[in-house]
Length: 423
Picture (spheres, rainbow, N blue to C red):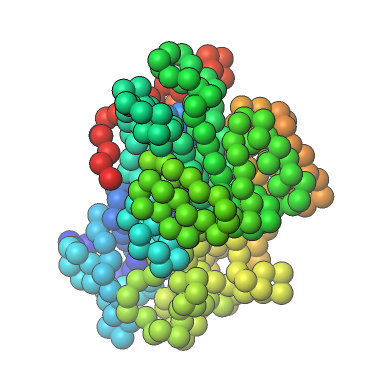
């Protein structure tokens, strides 16, 4: 892999998500050698993927080159590679570009879409966990508009203009709201030969309410906002099968749609090689102690979504969102330096900064510890927090400009089929 030999302890980080990036930043120019490995050469700001899917943003405004993040770190290196296996006894990892030894290994591989073993749904639906998948969804939505405009029958047009989103968490409701804004603001202007009333958006949620991880106030508000936008919300509804057109559920609801977007859950993305007992099979997350050390190992750590750290406050582990990954990455950097110096490590304690989700223009919900609110102010807070969390000044400027332009003109400017999608 052409990493220079050094007398410094080598810390290898697998994954350039929120956890891996924050860890590498905090280790910058310390007395360690850092090797960051990812199968993409960029960090993706996943909370805004849905805006790429719905033509609100171009992908380069939510992605940032990993090499640019570490370019001023004199003892840090990046390698574009996929890790195939960990060899813990040799302190070695196997990648598609070669082997690499480590002194300390940090797994920050995050999650992947969970289809719960349904191969038919997996092969016919659209996941949204990466930039390329978001671009595929954008292309498919726009292609369906074009096909609907030349459809020869009402049934065919109905299938092209019916959009089904499975999963009522933040990703699902944000995407449903964004597609509803396409229906309300773009379809009547760009496609005068189509009737916007013929477009239908269905959000299917298996539990009793959307945003089940947030407060009941947030759930009710979100459902209210979605219905105002014209989204049909179906709770206690699970998808049993989807063949590419026909959606079969556990209720009497039957839908015919060319587009089913799967946002119903995630599962961990572990790396082969560690003992089976350190992996919680149901969630595919590594069991870690209060220092993010994988149980049974002395020099292998896991942070973020892939780590399962239980405590009285979080018996099922921390929520799989950005903040735990960021906080764990920052603390682990300090702990690794303390460990190298022979000092004791500091236990991780999650600082919950609240939860939020946006449903569309002037519509969002925010849950803080002692305060819950929704509407325009919540939407403004959501925008500010996400804007500041973006990596890179350029990305913040571009996203702010796009949001301002879209707000003034009721427009989504990135309506481009750059890479046509085929199922």
